[in-house]
Amino acid sequence: MDILKLVANRMSETYDLHRRFVNPQLVRVLEVIGFNRNYCAAEGAHLTDEKGQDVLDFLAGFGVFNIGRNHPQVIDVLHQMLDARCANLIQMDVGCISGLLAETLCSIAPGNMDAVFFTNSGAESVEGALKIARQAQRKPGVVYCEHAFHGLTLGALSVNGAPEFRARNEPLLPHCEMVPFGDLEALEISLAKGDKAAFIFEPIQGKGVFPAPEGFLKGARELCDKHGALLIADEVQTGFGRTGRMFAVEHWDAEPDIITVSKALSGGFIPVGAVITKRSIHARVFDSMERCFAHSNTFGQNDLAMAAGLATLDVIQSQNLVENSRVVGEYIKKGLEELRDRYEMLTEIRGRGLMIGLQFGRPKSIALKTGWKLLHSMNNDLFCQMITMPLLEKHNILTQVAGHGLDTVKILPPLIIGQAEADRFLMAMEDVLKQAHRFPGAAWTTVKNLGLRTARTSA
Ligand SMILES: Cc1ncc(COP(=O)(O)O)c(C=O)c1O
Image (cartoon, rainbow, N blue to C red; front, side, top):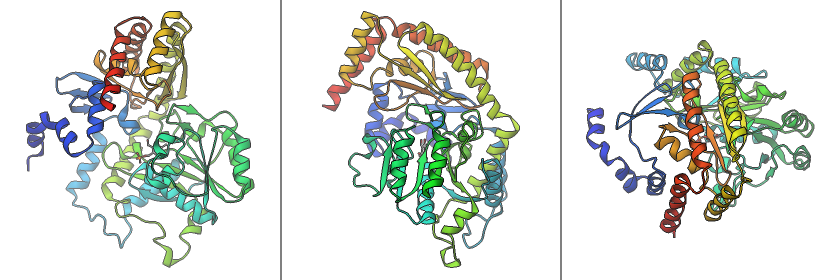
């Protein structure tokens, strides 16, 4: 089979195939916002589309490509694995590479971690963490935060703080309770009921890019200890250098009992995830030979994913990508703060390292206020398209909106970027902000028309 020839021959049908056989609503969205390009090649922080245009990837596959795309070291390791014809997935054995990756994960994780359970995705890591906590503590409930995102499988959805994802799935797991992010009093009230096995949180919430308020995680640690609950840090997105530390919890003084990871560990090649915890907790779940499969899966420890994980962690450490994330992140934040001081609708820059949220807010000047009101009366998700659409269309930079109805744009570039990529982004942002601060103007008309079109097609 010549897969590349097959793809080249059928490339022009891509969106049609998805319209017919996969998700036609996603195709409609991509078409209306002008994101319906075909990408043909990728390297590092750069994509090449079918017209041969260079696109700067400030989305990184929702945070998968911390080491950039198609990293030669990971490709080399995967080639070695394929050429060696490894004895993979025997199941009634244990593999060397998974043992090595578990050892490495424990060595880089904060706290005294010494037990790992491998998974295939972020949501599956969260499912594993919830099951381990419930079994270890012999309690059913979990506390989670408003706006939290931990994946979309049913267990993970039970601790999801966004009504739009939960809708039509209720009832979800019982005894799960939501508290405002940062509210220690509400957390204590919930934990004091005595039915909670764990408190799960993202150190920096992915939806909206909200870092944990100072003192919250330390307080949460103390409350969990007091009320016999485990502290679960979901680092699926924030892990592996994304925020300028190897794990984002290191920004605060709070050692979790369980850490969930996935995304970047894959190197962008093979889906993988892990639940990292302590032997004392793991042993309360896997507590007899009969229970050696108390929780398990088929593909979690597959050799290719494990090898990609080891190679990826080696790249992150040997190329100082955690420090690069911190330094370049600071540089971009500083540049954005200068823009914030000059463009009134850009109101706040949030985040750490290379996980940055650009918050927009209601302007004071009369003309812009009219435009702001008009767009928000049409649809609460429209405004940010005025930023992300021209960033791609005019400047060839791929970014994303940070969540429903938040007026926040988010950037998650690969951690390998340097000043050149940062400057290209900052210059593009300046241009896009300049256009957006002219009302009436072409930028507003484009997004207003998008709103009208969306309203018509969804009616
Ligand atoms: C913090 C967090 N947890 C869990 C998930 C779910 O991961 P996946 O999409 O691999 O299931 C995500 C995905 O974005 C995430 O950001």
